[in-house]
Structures are given as structure tokens and as C-alpha cells.
Image 1: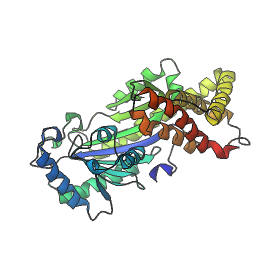
Image 2 (image 1 turned 60 degrees about the vertical axis):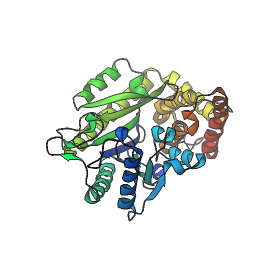
Image 3 (image 1 turned 90 degrees about the horizontal axis):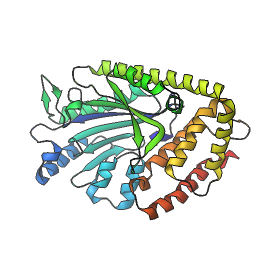
Image 4 (image 1 turned 90 degrees about the vertical axis):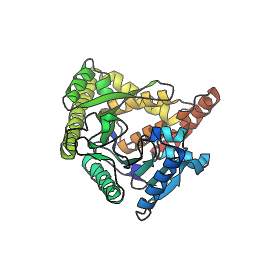
Length: 339
């Protein structure tokens, strides 16, 4: 699986994703398409990808178990999970590659990787998009570039997104505003991650480009690397400063958090993510090599499995109660080799 591989700078960058949006010439955007037009698009994409060694699945033909599995492996998003009518996914879960069909756009190529792997992820997504362009006549304007349902993606049609864990910046007065202003100079934004209830996920944010028109792919990737480098440098500085100024507090919270994650019988999503923030803050300073096998790959795996669990899409009290127990069991299972 792609998310089992070790990525660069995983102490801060949880994952990187590149999405390439394309639409087929002669069809309206997905929101305006008839059922027949959607079927035609599905057939076109199926024919174009049949020799690519990718698996093609109609979303509206899947049972609940298969749908849950695709969501938890990041092969489909929450919108497709909630409504799969007239939609499909073409994917290779081992390579972190998926093609969403009839989502916001007719075709969205998504490539994921752990860590700050911007260049390699972009190259993989761009190569796959180029193959599709050679087989399908895409909607393109000499003036505006590739045409997409959202004007913010017109031009290259490319969005680069990283999920970053920055508890140091989040807990340092003024640091977040400094970072946001710095990102704006690159035409990038930072936004908090939220769960289904709308609650902000502590310390975890999305970084993404907002400019795709009038910029080359090379420049876009270059800006992405600069953005991520700036975030990494600032976050590491903030973590060191917090550990130096509040050593006793961070040391205590680090070990308390580890104990709660390792031994709790019931725990909910916000609590898990808050505890992981203290783990991230104190890991390099206070980890005990003799007592724990905890590493950045495992920390991020706990994070992503918690966030991608299908139960985070549901709101009922009974599901919430079940998930507090299930979440604790899953984390204990991941940490069981520590002792």
C-alpha cells in the first residue's frame, strides 16, 4: 500500500496529493449532465483505461463493505462515498493512484504519497493525465488552458495539496499569521482540517495552491516545494522553542499522551488528534528509545487511520459511542509491539 511507504519530512508533512482535473470536450460539466451523458463519460473512461493495469469500479454497484474499504484507503473522497450515482473510480491502491469519474469534473486524476514527495507525485499524476489526454479529446482553450467546473482550477487544472501537522506553529502566538502571509506570496493558502461535525482538527492543516491559471506546471511545482520548505523550517523552530521554554510541561504531556493512546479503552477522534499533537511536539526531545518503538510512520498511520475511518462520516450518538471503543482498540493494536 502507498501509505505504508516511508516519505520525506514525515515529522511534519503527513501526505502529499496532486489532483489533475480534466473534462471531455462536447459534454457539459458534471452538475449539468444528464444520466445518459454520465453513462457515455463512464464508457469513454473505461475504454481509455482498460489497458492501464488499473481496476475500474462503478461506485453505484458496490456494496457497503467495498465502499468503506475504498474510502479508508483514500481511493474515493467523502462526496463520492455519500453519493455514487453515475460515478466510478479507476485505481491502483498500491501506487496511491485513483481516477475519479463524474465527480466535480469528468475526470480527476489523484496521486497520493506519504511525506513531502511533491516532485515524484506530480510526475506520476502528470504522466497519467497525459496518457488520458492522448486517448480522449479534452476541453481546452488556447486562451484559458484546460476548462474545469471550478474557475480556480482552470489553466493547468492542477492542485497540489499537503496535509501538515504543525502543533508548534498552532501553539505559538503570531506564528500562524506569519505563515499565512508568507504562503499568500506564493498564491497558496492554509486551512484547518475539520471532521464531519465541523469541529476543527487540532494542529493539522491543508496547504494548497490557489493559482492554476497563468502559471506553468514547472513553476507550480517549484512554488509547492518552497511552500513546504518554509512550513517545515518554521514548525521545527517553533517545536524547539516550545520544548525549551516549557520543557517540563511538554515532557509530562508527551508521556501522558502516549500512555492514553496505548492503554485507553474508549477514546474519540478529537482526543486522539490532540494527544498526537503532544507526541509530535515532544517526540524528538523526549522519546525513550528503550521503552517505545514509536516512530513518525506509526504516528502518521494512527493519524490517517483515525481521520479516514468510515465512522467519521456518520453523526449518530450510537455510532459515536461505538467509535470511541473501536478507535481505542485500533490504536492499541498499532502500538502493541511497543512493549
